[in-house]
Image (cartoon, rainbow, N blue to C red; front, side):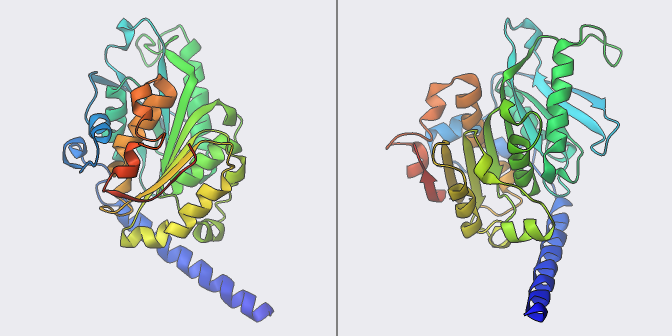
Length: 310
């Protein structure tokens, strides 16, 4: 029995190493093309609306961090100072090898829709700590009146800390779970998205522990039917993740049938944007993509294996 357990453990470890190596290989390819909002195929009017660029021009701010994630990378609407309100936030959690500087197109897209977005250069984001520190930094920016990085703090009283969402791809999906269940600010998140979240066997072999049963925030899970995702985030693992989230939590699951693991970082962005527009910005039209008998996702030909509880 001990010998069998040892052999099984070795097999799991080898599989995990091979998949991790594949993830790192994928990380060396472009993460999110600058023109993805124009090239990704859509299957519904709402998806098409929300994958297009929003009405705002976008500005960028960064600040060094004396931690493994090196810096905070923030995109925001260029006309933010002219608005008489604070803005909702989306926190990004990195996948393996896919740091914030590799998917700035995603942040720019959300910022064009009126969000403040924040990412880091963290390479081991599974524990959700970089997301936790991002929230703490946003709290600091929101209260800091003096100059920062040699200029005025444009974020002073402009960050809506009551409307924060979080999204993560691959390893970042595990990071999302831990950020919203295990970190100090776990209760601050009002909506979550996990894209091609790494499967349980791999996560356990790499000691990326998490407990989806503790999730309280409305959660959307999207994977793909691609060959790589069948290894990293197969259907059964996405279904288990969906089922582990308690039924009193709003949840949606689907898989795209025209993409693979790396592409899911941005192929789902139309519905990711709609999800956050609904939960963080009060956009009721965006909710029509997900809720009710006539939800758009149910008739989107690019999606399959759809599950939802509202």
